Image 1 (cartoon, rainbow, N blue to C red):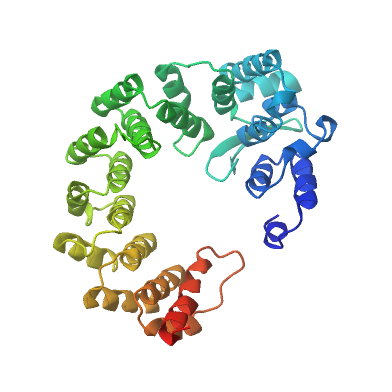
Image 2: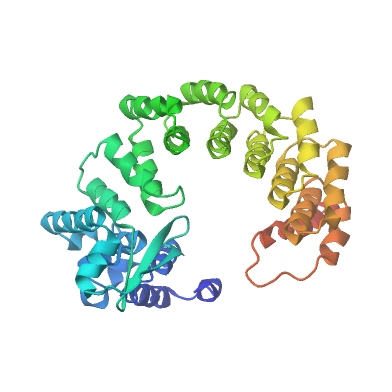
Length: 391
């Protein structure tokens, strides 16, 4: 599919591929095709899986593909209500119980984690020749939103907390709540900061972070409250996963207080926390130079033992406006990093900083394995050469 899209195939091919993806329950590929221009409106209903089959499959991405705005009108409100009830039954009964009822099998259940779309995972259960994913909570949430049903904060949180943070049920719940952008939801999420369980604090922090992140209004009413809350929260949070979410939220603010709150965690024992710090320093590109303490923290993070921390710190330096020679030297040192992705980012940074070392370093890079991400960063080298040569 990636090859098909890379070849820039015509719309007819993408539309046909979308039909095939839906018929074979490949919701993730169907979503990918929609993102790249496939028009589901070109398909006939009999060319696609039925909505009932999609709900039964437990794949949120598959259901959402069939409920794309261009073909959503094919389903009446009564049908959507039926599908909501079907999703709720699966969710409340549980996939294992429902599978055993449908297959009448007492064989061992096979459970595996699968990627359902670009961002979220679900568990897939196999029994008696049937395979069903446990994304029904996410499907239920999506159908309620389409029907204009305002589900309570508590219900959505309960659906999320039955799973890990990367599960579709969690992702759908936090997105729905964050998009409400109202004081009631903000207050309920903020209250979770005092909860004894880290999972509840993590859920609250994500809802609050996304509420501010998605607020594209001119007023940006949640910017001030979010910065105050997360700055204070960062000083007392002991759980690494929750602290990471809090620091990521601080990184969404182009404010000196946010940078100051990040600095103390540059040497934290948890690599995820350090990655959040390295990324967070890069959200204020209009600043002419890094503050001295940020400068020192980035230099340390660029020599971190964790590959992703080094890369994140290098990327922050690369895209910042600070042209300090010490930072350029630190990037150049990463040209010999053991990880090729870090090397590529160092080349990218040196090119953005108009450093001639990037040209030879790009030539010396080992070949990239097929499908390697971030290769587009190397385009900065030829753009530098154009600037250098005055073309």
